[in-house]
Every structure is written in structure tokens, then in C-alpha cells.
Amino acid sequence: MTDTTQTQQRPVYRNIHISQIVGYRLPPAGIVSILHRVSGVLMFLLLPFTIWLFDVSLTSEISYERFTSTFVAGIGFLPGWFMKLVALALIWAYLVHFIAGLRHLWMDMTHSVSMEQGRISAWVTLGASGALTLALAIKLFY
Image (tube, rainbow, N blue to C red; front, side):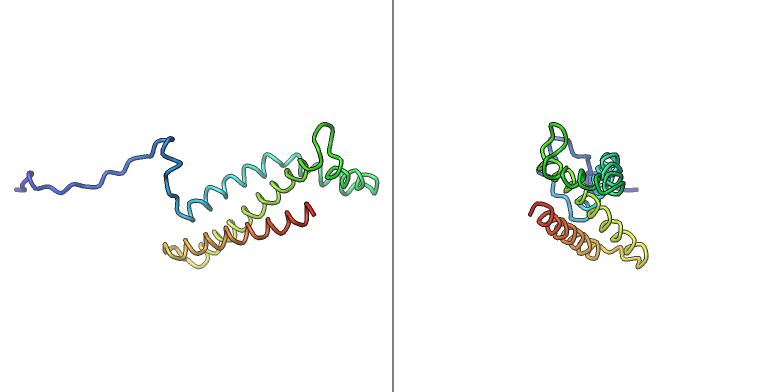
């Protein structure tokens, strides 16, 4: 028979409330996982814009001039800098999604599932996608 007066307290794991999200410290792998999903949704939502850019840039020389003027003069009531921001959001989404996808493929191929390797690869993913996005933002805006 066991003595119920000296039972050990087991840890209680609860879901966090939406108001606790600001103070919750997410590990780098969790941040990469969330950004991977957000970037996938953003690319899906910007797919009509991407198809339009591709179509206008390849149809003819005149349409290519229209394409390049989009980033200077804008379209309708949307200014050129806003179109550059939309293109930069698409660039960011692609780079984050691509590099995070490579991270997942690498982890699957090498069976590296330790916490330390996951943390390091998450930081590399965040750093590489951030640096490439910054480089392309400088090229786009200057």
C-alpha cells in the first residue's frame, strides 16, 4: 500500500492565455516555425500580385517599362514606395520560407534532432534570411 500523504507534486502544464503571449519567451526554433507558416500564408496571399508582376515583366518591352514604372510612380492611388514595400514583403516571405524549408530538409536528412542543433540551425536560418532580405532591400530602395 502506498502512503497518500507524501505523494509528490507533479508539474502542471497549462496552455497560456492570449494576454500572456507578450511575456512568453519562445525559443528560436519556435520563432522559425511560426515565421515559416506566416511566410507561406503571405506568399499565398500575394500570389495574384506575383503573377501580375511576372506577366507584366515578360509580355513586351512596353509592358516591362510599365513594370519598372510601378515601383517609381505606383499604381492608381498606391504610391511607388508602397509597391516596393509589397515587393519587399514578398522577398522576405520567400527567403524565410525557402531557408526554413532547407533547414527542415537538412534536419530530416541528417536526423539532427537535438535541442542544441535545432537552436543553432534556427539562429542560422534567422540570420541568413534577415541578411539576404536586408541586402535585397538596399538594392530595391537605392
